[in-house]
Length: 136
Image (cartoon, rainbow, N blue to C red):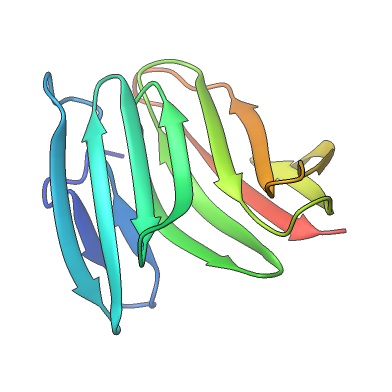
């Protein structure tokens, strides 16, 4: 998977793709998609997505994310980066979620009081992983 040259785009299946970890300096883009305002900030050190000024996704280092879909029940996406990434998403506070990475059970994670869920994904140049998060 390559970096998302548009920084953020809507896919035909209704999902979002965003992020460009190849950029040397922080780059921002705002777009209105299906009535919602999305802001992406991305470069080699971090990728962050906001929806209607609320936190959605953050990764360190920066990542490229394809087919991102999130709801109150969880999220799914494919992620790519030149090295392992720490990813944080926002869900319901103090709720347990099942995590699947590349179709394998990666365990359960409970969100904190603020609803943040953090996970690590093993990545590397030319390697992407699919992530699926579902409310337990």
